[in-house]
Length: 197
Image 1 (spheres, rainbow, N blue to C red):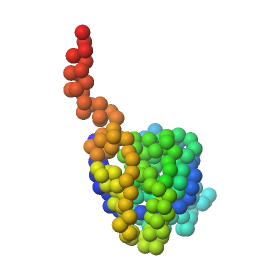
Image 2 (cartoon, helix red, strand yellow; image 1 turned 45 degrees about the vertical axis):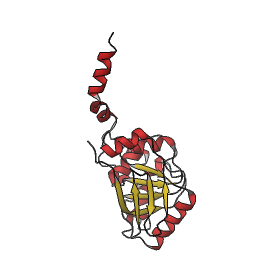
Image 3 (cartoon, rainbow, N blue to C red; image 1 turned 180 degrees about the horizontal axis):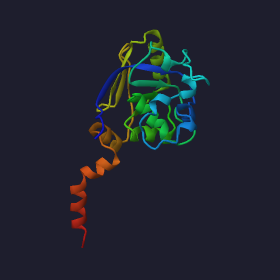
Image 4 (cartoon, rainbow, N blue to C red; image 1 turned 90 degrees about the vertical axis):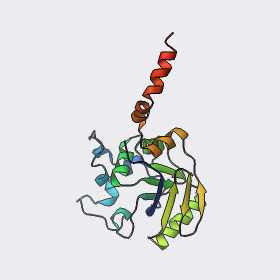
């Protein structure tokens, strides 16, 4: 069982860059590992550190001004290769939600499979959110999964977002695909018994 997802209210980390691909999220040289642990320290590795391994202070993840469980990203987040490690890195770093006006489909599903909620918002809402966070890094956002709403607490602006019903059920109950099957074992066995003939 993973951490159940209900309502998250958090400050945000702003990344106002468009077309961020999975190689930028987690560079290919870190894909050798087969477990999900430790990927967070290499999230956006080549933007966070220079070739000598020194922190690039200007990059947002190195800026103590910004923190929180919500990453606010520019349009077309997670494009490029379909590597699941990108979602592992986002989850392992501690983000529970990524907000963007558009996600690459495979990356969006990888996030959902790793208990990170991708929230698609309109361009105006995203622009207002970036504006609010840059003006005041303590700006909080409420992501309400049961109601499927996202609210900028500083302005009161709210939008509805879409999510697959099955994935919503899994997130709210802390179930991955295997857990879901196991939780329905009785129903599956009953169906098989009924249809044996």
